[in-house]
Length: 416
Image (cartoon, rainbow, N blue to C red):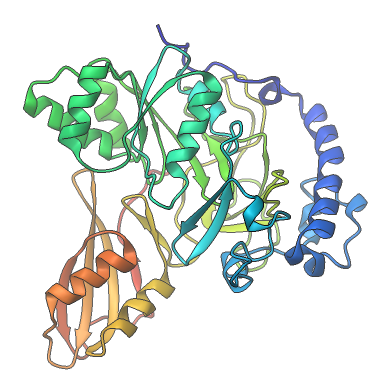
């Protein structure tokens, strides 16, 4: 018997607005002081800031925005976290790598990434067996789910990505009741199970992230009796916001402060206006302050009918830059430049991202002098640099659009 969908994990989720504001007025100054005195990166950028004056989400607008480029530029041997963590590397429990490269800390202690609230909102509890299909390779996604499942007492099958037949057989044999992973991989597992004649009807909950949950896919799961909810998080920040069964926007997690700002300026926009998601995490091991995610969203007025009282944001509205996520992996413009540099015959490259059924597609269009390319070598570079596979399409000089785009995301997303 599983936990009722939508169960509250802790009292923080149902605080009154006044209680939450009072707690923030206490926690924010301490966080700013901690970051300013204990980290190399913030010692300089917050030099003129008086921590005691930063007591609310609105007051955060006085502080500079931290960007992923700042995390990368501060890195050097012996300081892979760019000076943003107060702990030396040999005092961290875990270190991960994301494309960039960007290095992030982690911990085996407690629900360090704060995903437990989301799993409980999905109805996952101590009697569940979770097939964890998030990646365990260098990225923290697998550990994010695993530590959250430990928090709520659920059993975990650390499956990782790929090998759908093996995973379907394991899920049927073990009696898996819940799935965690990217939105579309569960469909692959279920269809594989159908083809093999396996009974996967025990899977009743799906906790998904790392990609867009398209309405058609959610509906397909619902037809099989599976409640599928999504969360929005990053390797740097952990959980940022998550759905409850009310499915009215994403509820901001209690361990972060979210602002929606005009891209490139850091200035907050009016509630309801689309802007860039900027997040301050209250995690003292990695106190990122006004961290610009590059994602676009907006504030959804009011409170969720599920009883959780924190601010809500609408679904993912795209990227403030050309960065996109394909099959759970971020692809950035600087990686496209790295790809071009690797092949002297390639003049320009453009990635076109689409959708076929419920799967992401990637076309890698390259421009060369004569319209030919060593497809084997280029395909291997795509796999190594972008960590996904794509179809190679070669064009003669002048064959690519001259519009400044190196990543063209042609998918269509849910307005909610």
